[in-house]
Length: 491
Image 1 (tube, rainbow, N blue to C red):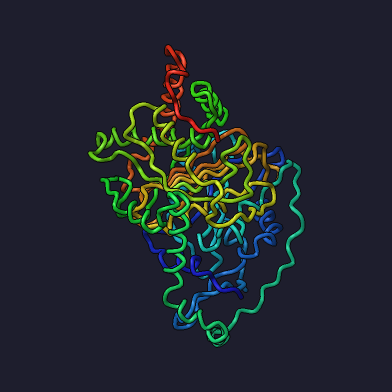
Image 2: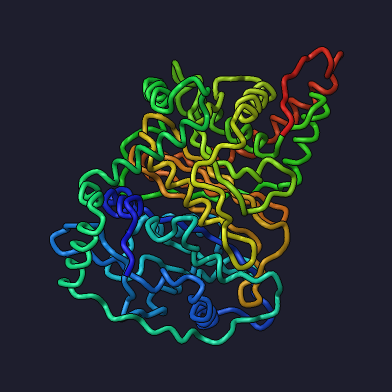
């Protein structure tokens, strides 16, 4: 029996029909000659659940709500309940898969059972299939707990499922035992009595100070910077009341193309920048085009504030998942017409960030095959939940993954798109995961607020084309790059 942390419990408390706190991913596979079916997936999960013991536990409330809930073993745990099967109608295209994912992620999880589900989606075109994972934010904290998707992968195509676990659940504590443990905890640690009333608020405030404080001048306090952000008001279509249903759109980008853009920008500027800077610039351009098409660039909409959790390793050529993850609020210059100027604005902000500051510490992400995107995307969603909704417009999480193929029971993974939950008042979240030469983007939005979510997806491609053309034009212009005096900071 283990008590939920204040932050974990807060995800349960704030969840309602409009804000299901589900984090997950949708991964597409090609089956081996021997095939892949629901039974194979269930067998694989049974064998790997020992790596994620939390996925066999459920939340149990304390009688009278006198203390935070605890994790207890689910004595009726049934893996087949959690690993489910579905299929797309013909032709099994991307749009149909995205629509199904949106519906799955909109549904709250059953709190009487372990807070996760996995779906085998059959019927994709070209004989492919997908695996959709959905876990509650309280279950995947990004540090102490792995996501279920992390343990099903192998770096080789040979099937190595292994024997089923011999796990036996511990007896569930009675109501009297739960109350007794809570009372004992209060008397043993008197400060926990006060925590009954203020623990969640205190942890949120500490998280807010850590996030914002890492991005401000040392002479300013974290709180004053947060107030400054909160006072910055624009008529943002991304800040709105959200409903219960979601839209999801997946986007593929060639990682090599982004690297070529980075090199082209380096040639123009005489210095180097990061792929992460290019990605943020591309998203800025896509949001700008979307704004213009929707509202003709609303008056005063000079920028979007984006909450950007940054893996320190994402600023190098070949990032890894281990190491520190920092979070920053940066301004996306959506009002800037020239793509290269947008890039320079992003680079300037990212280069000014303190690379030594810590948000959640530098504990390495523990995983089986070097691929743990859901856990790190969960960090971004947690950071988003700790900040006031007035401080930012959109969350953008970018998680670097391995640049080699991964397999699940012999089936090669072709792509993996993150599903990052929305927080109250925020209509859009953007998750990015790089893997095996590709960048895979998951756009999650409120269904009613962003009926034109597909426009942002199309604009991403157009933004890449526009940035490349702008760099080429600048390269060919007289006097470039010396007379341009471009301020680009090396990563």
